[in-house]
Amino acid sequence: MIISAALLGVIAVILAWPFPLVLARSDWPARSPDVALVLWQAIALSGGMSMIGSLLLYGLVPFGNALPQSVIALGYSLRSGTLPADTRFTHVLALGAAILLSTHLLLNLFATFVCAERQRRRHYTLIALLSDPLNGQPGMRVIDHPAPVAYCLPGAGHSATVLSKGLLRLLDADQVRAVIAHERAHLVQQHHLVLLAFKSWHSALPWFPIANRAENAVALLVEMIADDRARRDVDDRTLATAIALVGLGQQPEVLAAAADGESDAPWISSPERALVAPRVYRLMNQALPLSRLATMAVFVTAIALALAPAIVLLRA
Image (spheres, rainbow, N blue to C red):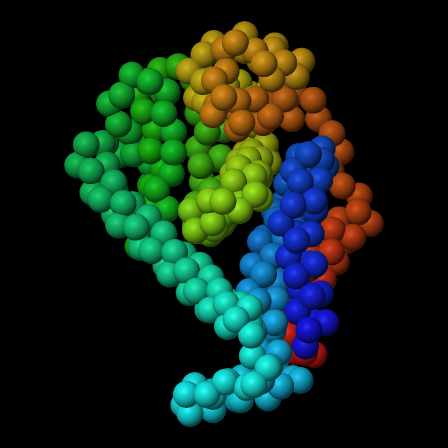
């Protein structure tokens, strides 16, 4: 089992730094964001399983040569209050770390979802009280706010897309249609669940080098996926203008800088630049999506990453 533990440790290290770093710096995810999102999910799942599995297998080394046998032997040892003679402190430490890490991740995931749902319900109640329905648009609510605001409130029982009066005054009909299509794509495709999972991962392991990078990358990808759905209803320039106006509260001249790839333009603050400028640049400078062969290669890689830890554990 020591070899299996080492192998999972190597996989965990690769998925914690070099592999996601290369992916985050690559240009191709913007061409096929849905494909890239699948790969990011596989990296997160495989990385977590590999990290926990490596610690677990190393901690079980004194208890046997196979995982099922070792788990049974560990149970007997805990009941009898004795440990094998060759058990070291590092083995006990690894077992404790595996149990604590897996428990911490699961509890943090549960707490993140519960907290988000509580906040969503409270927000939905306020929106129901302080907003008006948009004529001819079921599920749309309009709040009296001067700034251009658009967002969705997902939920199993109740969901809504919220627009501000400032947005309706600022955008023309086609741009409003683009915003609505974008927000509805978030609701239909349940993007909030993916975002909450990566937010939970980051909050549980804030010291983990790739957690913050993964959360930011996934947030941008889901916005691009929603943009692609909105592109079916409006042309790219209309959508790009709407994104700039809503995301930055600026006038259409911001498109010129974004279209030229000027990510250091003074009109974009750092948080806004991370989501708005790449989306506008992508729409104004179209690139072909990944080929079928490249897409298949990414899916095969994602499947291999997701299955690798389970296969190693089953063969341990």
